[in-house]
Image (cartoon, rainbow, N blue to C red):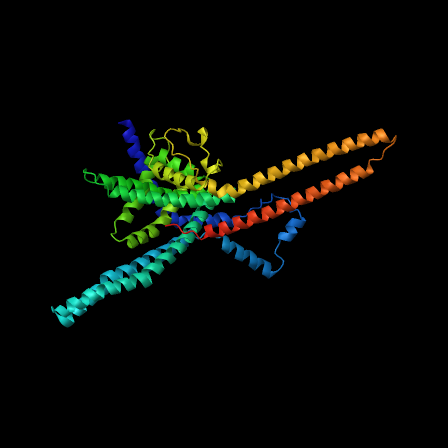
Length: 449
């Protein structure tokens, strides 16, 4: 009974934390800009004269152009959280959603009423309306809804990232991203795949033939609440440098809090019957939940039993990538959590091994470099033995031998081997950097729902 009370209180605590973003958005920009405008230099005491150095002289504004440049840089660095939230609301709610509602509940009923006024209750009106309604709906969805939907998703992804970065820099400072570029790309792609599979899993759960009334709907809402929490907290955890397996495990272990945090967004998004309208509602409210997630401090270690809802999709993702990558290589995403990182480690989601395909090229390059270095050492040692043997034979033949010829030949051969090895390493490094740049550009175009 005590555990149930703690779980209920934690769910309520998560719901209250999710609503904080509505209030924080109004004063976050003001505090962030005031923090940026504060002088970084220390004030001088009484009787103390400023020290003139080269750095201080170089930082003083000498011309009006330099002062204008500093003003422009300050304007660029200003926080724009409220502006981005308003832009998301105008694009998704004011333009996209209202246009769909106006077409469905104003244009189409108006045309139907006009046809009824012209033809009354004749069969002509029924025939024309039966042909006109699907045609107009198809044209509207094809030439307005679909292009605007794709455009809004791309623009929303950029604005969501801008909101998350501005809020994180104000509270936490500079983001600490995943250091490896290849690991960063693999983490992003696998996270997107797991979110899609988890969304399909929740949809299948909704339509299961369970005789208990509202059981499937309740399980479906639990899935969607955890998924909405993952959406909101993923920006913060990504800036903190958390990898995917750590994010999923943290949600499963502390599921009461995240169930309550994502519940308002999940319920409000499921109220509309149309998928497009539901997406518009989600896009309008989601920026507020990003800010709430950045401000929130999750309540942990409430329930000892983790809710392993992500285990199925993680196992499926691992099975898909094991079929494509045959090899013993393991990426850093497959490393288990340390005991100090998450407290209780019972019932964890199986760690991901799917990212090994993203590091095959890097591992091959490292193996080739190690083999070349080993070959160079063996060749170097064999040459030293030959030179030593030659020196001993010359010592027996001549009373005072001169090793200048042997040393020059050895130095020339060693320099040639070193130059070849450096040239091969430079070519391999250029190829690897080109592949990483292309993958990074492709990842930057990624737009998340």
